[in-house]
Length: 110
Length: 125
Image (cartoon, rainbow over all chains, first blue to last red; front, side, top):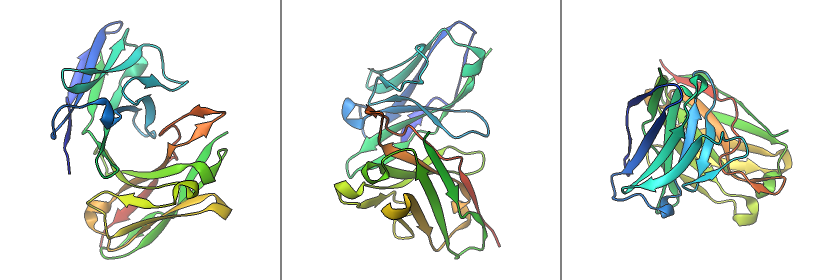
């Protein structure tokens, strides 16, 4: 099974910009991995922010955006808010129809 | 309003079995692909498996760690997704979430858009 890698932790200042990345042990992440990004706060179910690399749900704040960057999927938060402090997970699709989550990035807004 | 409500969790001994249920409302269940995701205490998310919509064949896929031990099924008449978990191991202890892998809400594509509150399965002797 492929391994999906994320930064274990990142810190951003309020109002600042931060980029989280998501890599694959099988090589470059492409649009064919249909990258997803989820936000999870303690005690809550995950919430989908980004699907298919860069598409947003109706509830996704405009300050979040998704892209492909240097062979990885990326989630950029521009103008961080205190409520953005959370764990962020990426999800990639692999041949055989299987999904694999990354280990998560703990984002601190400080 | 879309609702996913899991039930059937609890404490079970290693080697035991449970059947988790996920009752779905607010969407056209027959058209939805559904997935199970789990999260061990203090750990990250792990995709467990999916069940395609009946219109797409209703077939299932499971991740390698649970393949052969876990079975996913659905009952269209009850708009309910099931996860039969057998030969449980201590490492299967987790909160299990059901989620809408593929569905449309008011005509809008909303993949992995809706999640249940999760149900705890504890495997311990």
